[in-house]
Image (tube, rainbow, N blue to C red; front, side, top):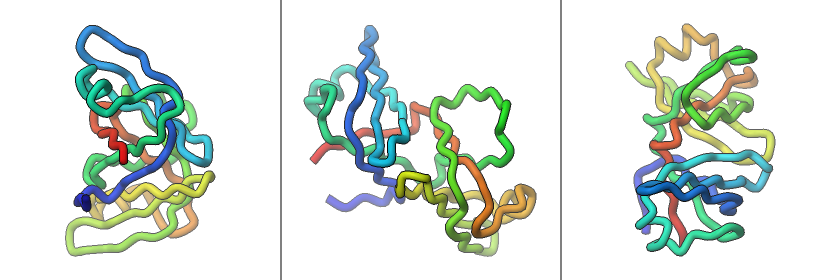
Length: 141
């Protein structure tokens, strides 16, 4: 199956914390970065998720927030992935920002061109991808 989401990040389930309705899934990417997803318990069962199972995090580029200089920032978003801007593709209103993570994964974000300018983003600059755990889907082969 092909999907329109720009971010399909393969990894392994490293932890599952089951609640009454939803579960918190911790996914470890190949470079060691961690992603957290909140999905229903029914989805955990349907996907046969367990620790050590190969799975992918699926995230729409429009759900990725980009930030800089987050040093002491405290955010409610569970996922903050720091890396280096690999490229920026500018459009009339929006820009596509590709962020290279230290472990080799890439995260694509679609943000406004004005935000790119306000953040001073350019190829080679440090930035972070910020993703709410409720915006992360989990898929298995």
